[in-house]
Amino acid sequence: MRRIYLVLIAIMLLAIPFAPMVAAASEADEEVEEETTIRDFSLRVDEGVRIGDYRVELISVISRVDGLIEVKVWKRVSTFEDWRVMEILRDANFDEGADRGGLTITVIEIFDEDTVRMRAKYRSSYGYPQKYITERGMAPKNLPELEVTTALDRKDVSVGDEVKVTITVNNIGNATARDVAVQDSPPLPAFRYVAGYPPKIKNSLEPGESDVAVYSMVAATEGDVTIPATVARYADSKSRVSSASSQPQSVTIKPKRKPDLVLLVEPPQPISYGGRGTVNVTVKNQGDASAYMVEVKSNLKSVGDGLEVVEGNLDRSFLEIPAGGSESYSTTIEGSRSGSRIIDLLATFQADGAILQKETTFEVMVLERELRFLYFLPIVPVLILAAWLFRRYKEYKY
Image 1 (cartoon, rainbow, N blue to C red):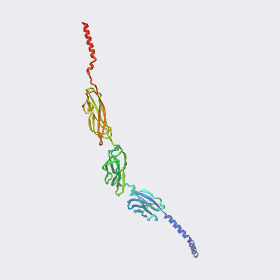
Image 2 (image 1 turned 90 degrees about the vertical axis):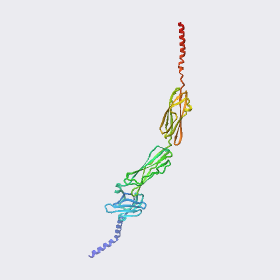
Image 3 (image 1 turned 135 degrees about the vertical axis):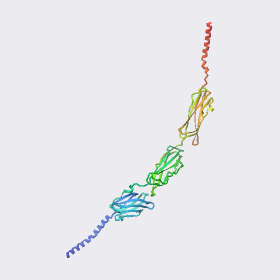
Image 4 (image 1 turned 180 degrees about the vertical axis):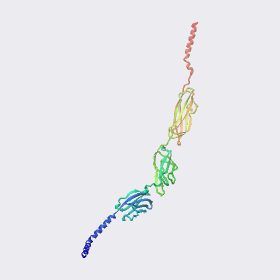
């Protein structure tokens, strides 16, 4: 019995030098098990990341100014679930924190109303964060969505032309758009704005509702002009601001439109002495603007001695001849004196406050007077010869 005690004492004495080594090894194993890592990642609202069995989901950005967001952290195959409001640059421990096998989350930056950057500290064995879309993100959302279109009533524009711009804003979403405001481009130097600018839209638009704003402007200078996109800003029920824009419009402004009158005259054939002829006149506008107060006058009275108007008149007036339009009329004249006359026609008209003129000339020929007795002159010698022969015949007969 005494020997057994002596053996036990000897074993205990031999084990004393190895005790520190065992303790050190145990502590080393514990350090390996507790090793942590830090990873940064960005999240949008209704997105999450997988970190081991943990899930970190961004619910909303409560206040960008105050640096507050709402997150949900839960653990797969566990009852752990934690909804929390986090403050920027403040560590938040979940499930006792990274040092005890949980998570430590820090909000680093809030980019906008939907996106933040976060930092997670956790055990290295959990691997890399893996992003995913939450069930809320995949579910249909009740959000407004605006569609903006800008239309010009004409693309063929010249200096002085009026252009109407129609802006249509349509809510194609499934929630009310609030605080709707249209931000059109600043007044462009190529145009002079005359009415309805700046455009205004209803402050709120229900789902499926639309509103229209119309303004007018006049082209002031020629050249190529790009009308920038129209932007409509709006907010949802949580005051989150969004925007929608139309497509930009390109317009080439041509030089100012002008009328261009042409006088087309169909003169009569040579008029017999005392006969009549018809003059056909067409006033045609070959320009791209209307001609107003058109007055056509001739110099027939001053140069037309021996010519008389018997039907109609060479002098005419027209209130307007539109671009591409024409006016025609006819005049009958009588020639009482032979010869050739050159008649001038002068058209005077107005265009944009200016007085313009166009002229043309045509010739009228009156033939010499016919002397019908001359047709009988060749017969006289024959008659005289016949009378003389008849007389001689009678003399010889008796």
